[in-house]
Image (cartoon, rainbow, N blue to C red; front, side, top):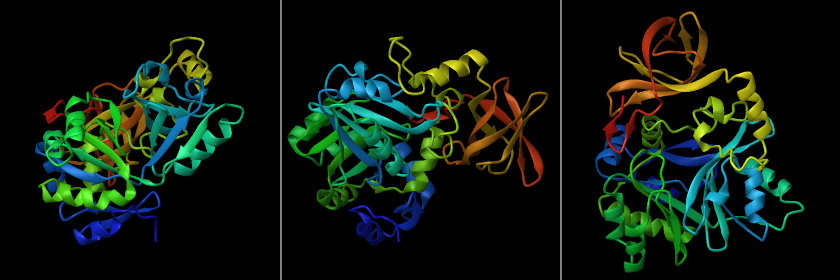
Length: 360
């Protein structure tokens, strides 16, 4: 038996098929993964993502400490409510985790992946020695992600006037506390929406309210195809400690200025740039029948080989798509080996769908 969120019994009551995900028993779908996917793209759905880790950082040295730890620069968060995405790197430039950091009234709030909980907490705790910082894992909290073009208006109709006002005021990539809730406008689906971090004991009732209002319960299956269409990396597949942001389509998340900010991994990344980045993460589209899957070999004529990191059938495109790490010189065509046969694929920018629009 794996770990369970406060919503586990409710998932079972709603007919969820559960699977192990990073040591957690989580809903894969509630009947139809494809229907849940389309519901989020066209209207909205709610995901239980309480398996993710919430860590509050406070103390007088919180800002310089995080500036040393993160590839992105928290000094860019010039007021409470602002948020940014950042890799957390090891000394070789590999990605320990990718996370979202929010500026709060008291310091910072990090939201990290479920599978990296132990390694991230160990890394942060070890490196807090000698700094006046507090590292507080908030295991008392749950997280609900309500995603889709109608998510904010539907949630605003269910909550108090003050929370509804905050939902309407939030800009993309902002998050603010309202009472004992923390409401953010970020997401992992390529659609607009909200993440609501709230006390765990309040989560089942609020989840019920959302479902009762016609917001479809949605599982990890739809979450995966939605994020793949949006070109968002999944930790452990598209990014890991053996690959740097420069080979993972995450160069934009590195803050190189100010030049004197010597964050962990900076020297390794600079050395990689000097020697020439050898690989890149691209999108693949299979124009023929078949399904692209992780670990399938990608062959680029006259250049070399790569590998699919994530692949699936795209419900929005009605085609198989993938993310793949390939040689830097790869152009717009390649081949993928599927069951011993080679199939042509189109190489595209690794963003297929955003805000309901097909981009390839």
